[in-house]
Length: 228
Image (tube, rainbow, N blue to C red; front, side, top):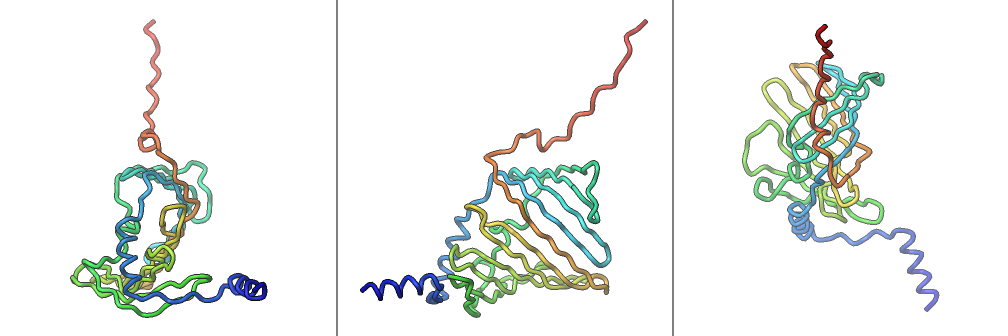
């Protein structure tokens, strides 16, 4: 009995490959996970963006978001830290929010491709076919995490009259949230090659952010001299 127990512990420590789940069962769990994944009320994070092609960009930003309210602080340009950060304010939805990106049964058909071993669990890759044509970006493949049943990687094809290419967005777990960590796109714009890479990091999830964080500071009043 002790020998069998010791062998079981050794196999567990060695990370014996888990059994694959039925692909339809994975899709059922995926549908539930997408509908119930929480969205942070407030979030702070850093992102870097690099572009090469018709326009070249290399920047580092810190974002403060509360709902639609966004404070964007540019900290470095072309690898050089700014002495005075550039602060902009806007109201916009998060285009990379997982519930917006993830393909859903109402708009896509998912066909199982293969299981992918990832350490002590299995991920599941599906080919995505749009049920309704239209739009410049179409998802063609999604990899579903075998633990949380949320998209781990979403691949796109993009195309318009002036540009076309391929892209993907990768996600990972941060606490109870599922957030983007990497986006890459390569293609052709007006006949010239173009690339973009975005990396997200340093996620923080405060309970709330003060309204003043999303308001431009008021200028100081001009000093006036009292009448003589």
